[in-house]
Amino acid sequence: MVHLKGVVKHFSTITALRGIDLELRRGCCLGIFGPNGAGKTTLLRILATLARPSAGTVRIAGYDVAKEGEKVRPLLGVLSHRTFLYGHLTAHENLQFYGRMFGLKKLAERITEVLQAVDLVTYAHQLVRTYSRGMQQRLAIARAILHYPQLLLLDEPYTGLDKHAVSRLHDLIVRLHAESCTIIMSTHDLHRGLDLYDEIAIQCRGKIVYRGPSLETDVQEFEQLYSAYVG
Amino acid sequence: MSGSKIFLQQVLALLAKDLKTEWRTREIFTSMFVFAVLVIVVFNFAIGADTELIRQVASGVIWIALSFASVLGLQRTGHMESEEDSLQGVLLALHDRSALFIAKMLAQMLYLLVVVICTLPLCGIWFRIDFLACIGELCVAFTLGMLGLSIVGTLFGMIALHTRACEVMLPILFLPVSIPLTIAAVQATAQLIDGKSLRDIADYLVLLGIFDVVFFVLILIVFDYIVEE
Image (cartoon, rainbow over all chains, first blue to last red; front, side, top):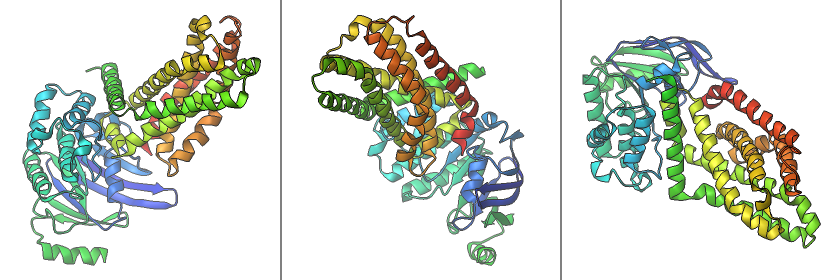
């Protein structure tokens, strides 16, 4: 599903990614851990077609991200700590806008479905700027899954979430994972959701320094592993 | 669905979203209109009662007001898109990213149009100029001029969004590039006010048209790269 080879990214004199190689099969859930500045967000931005790699190739579902961005984008759902929502529109209007952008059929039904999934049906016609941070993040989850993405990119998705939203997001990831959605989640929180991943990777100074199966790693063991690689 | 149908659908969705938001907040129109009126009022007092002088500078005052009002409008638009990084969400949903340029340009053009419709009658009263006498001809000159301001403004609005000092960068980039357009628009408007016909100002209209077409085509080619990084 995801294939990266020798991906390098420079920002003028700073090198954010130093040759990332990564292969991910369809339906796999990968957790990328790393300290701030490791290049996790840059990697996800390249996968999301929001940035071009300075060198290397990135393919998603067989499409070259740099050359066939328009074919890749409908396959992606992206959730970051920013919601990508418009505060002066209601939840329903925000989802309607994104649904129209993706050309979704039976949009009204789909909007109700995703709003139910994040428990926001009651607030559907309220302006988003009146929502609490947790509610906005739940709506952002709804936005990210609205168009049935095949690859979900989650960049520090737990930032700013309340307990309710954390559990909703957790349930949703489990459900999407069960439905064979490929998931890549970046975080620096070692304790959250370790059970979700099929595989884990540690990224440090622009390189993936460790990759292994998650099921064989318990939290303490992983903490030791993380310290050994990151310091 | 065919590429052009998706493109049109996305342009309409973006335009509808922008106009709906503006209808609710009226932030962009208010700032543009108030600023344009203030410029005209200030110039009106500065020039005094010299009717001939007023006639000579009126078109310049109008286009200065529109240029600076454009900057304000573009800054508000940029602020709206950067508040929750919504622009990133839009870029993730776009099939062809030039749909974003077309929609933003059309929205900016509409804001300018409303500002002109509201400002021109006030201008006529203060400057004692009968714009109705040449309204048809003025429509042609204003359409070409506003289109140019919207095209270039949208481009630099997007570029400025990626810079740290967005508020400063936008006028620094936008105003110098729009100088040829402003000169042509001012001259065309001044001569129409003086009772000349469209045929008399054909050179200026051609210049405006060329400016619009050249920038429109150039921006369509490079827009994908502009919004990416």
